[in-house]
Length: 216
Image 1 (cartoon, rainbow, N blue to C red):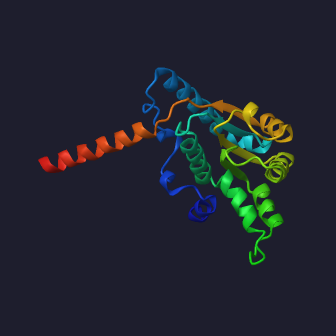
Image 2: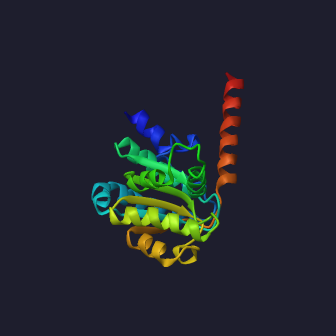
Image 3: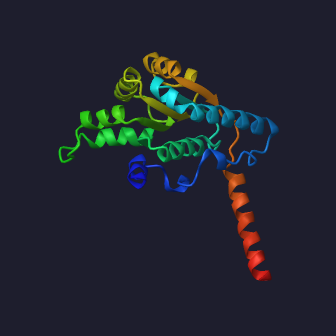
């Protein structure tokens, strides 16, 4: 059953093993970034600790930072894995992929209608939308996201967002941003990319393995 939930969740394969307790805060270089990410981790740990109550209230998260590679997606995947482990139905999707899936339903040969797709996104227990706000903010896209977010807002469904924009800077109208604000904990992430440092740490681990094997 857990494998079926994991397949449904569509969490990127690179993040299958991520959990909150394995989220590495030491890869952030600046002290300010480390303090900020440690506070974010504590807030998210508290959120997950009380998740049954948060779930009943339909309260989600909005994780944001202008910096690409600041750890938002890794954290969202960690949360997704934790909730899948607990038996929740989770759906992880890039915002741009949602738009592409909607467009594909317009193909007459597609067996899934637009209304069916939107219903799925509105009804899944927990929806994680990654990179929200990076897509082109066309009027029709605004309407589709409003339909998804409002449906989940009305039904008290948990939605978790990651974004490169604060709510104030999102290019969506206030019908969307006000609903997100009302039912989300807004958590800022460091304005620092850690991808280079993570790559460096992995290379260092590989060199250490090579050195140990050569000595053996």
